[in-house]
Image 1: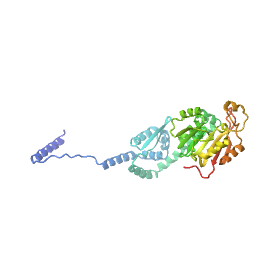
Image 2: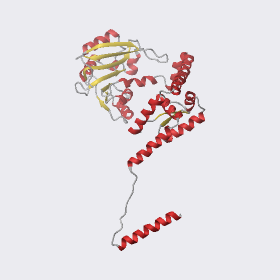
Image 3: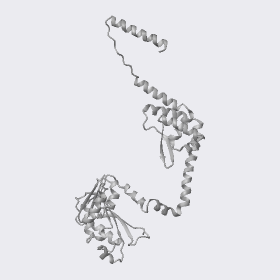
Image 4: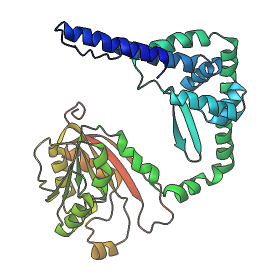
Length: 356
């Protein structure tokens, strides 16, 4: 023990003996660091991290756009080793975060988890740094970096335009982009998959709406549908006839009849039932075959109707209580062996829009 500390210790013992001789009891005193002081210490750490002008410019750039080390080096005109060193300092201090994208790592300003004091500090610093000539030059070079990103993308599409459909199909599947379209539906809707079959359509709709009611007359089809849909808590599978749906009046916001109507002995009755279970203004989507001469379909697949013409379908829909009918022929798939298809959309009469 150093001499000075030893003398202080002896004095403390002496005071203790004198206090005991006078009948005084020793009292323990606990000392803790004031939280305000800890907060001040954190602020000083932030000030240390931001004291370097390069790091301040770096944060200003990363607030505008997430960048890789190489891109940041181009903007700041610094070697990648220097950029990496500054990024580590800022990352350790909690000022930047990063995410991996393939073999690249992108960095950005991280303020979401920081307190109000830190946000105020950054606001003050940003006002000062953004006025410097260096920051102005950084902003100009940033535009160049982003322009090169865009140029690379444009060059790819320019060279791939003629084969883009094939490339996308090879990479993601022929109809992959169509799987995203149900995201346009209102998340509060209850949708009926009428004539659901094995539940393929219900499975596509379920992630995007409040509830799907899947109805089919075939017990065998419904068994397969239940297996496919077992992981969707918002799908209700029911057995029933399309001409007598197991649904209350105005139970649905929208309904689908996809490749179903040609199996129904009385399409008009099925459409009237669809109108009954839809809310006023509710939407019906139909996809089916255009008129054809495949007579063998009656025996092979139980088809009752050999497709529907536009005038015929419009008359059926109007008679069932639908309006605002739109109809379009779908582009034929060269590899498909069946007749051409159409899609028709209509709204149940009563005005207004589906409930929200």
